[in-house]
Image (cartoon, rainbow, N blue to C red; front, side):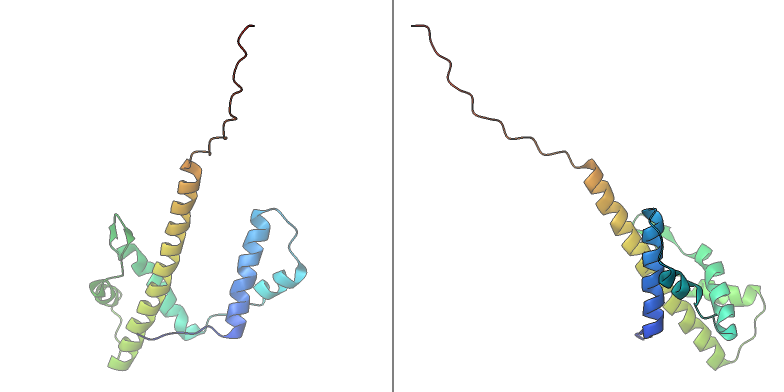
Length: 144
């Protein structure tokens, strides 16, 4: 499996997007430095835009089961190329398939993290509050 590492700028951008989302969620003021980082995101290389558009189209073809969503099947990739009558050389086709698979891995990782966070939130919400400890009762006096 190919392991893709994010560049420092990409990690910084992802961090800024996360901070921006959290600040907005909490209705706090967003520092201008965070806004500048988010707005400075580089455009996607034009030759990768095709792969990204194809990925989002094929996301609708992925199997859904009780554990969540599955990988985009290879047959869906072949169907996509056939549907849109896309002719590619062997090398370009291999690059296209690899790019779809890398995007799919990341997508499923994010889906898994979100599902886990939702399950944890549900557990916390359904958790019964702890009972307060009871004070020992004083023995009652008997009449003298």
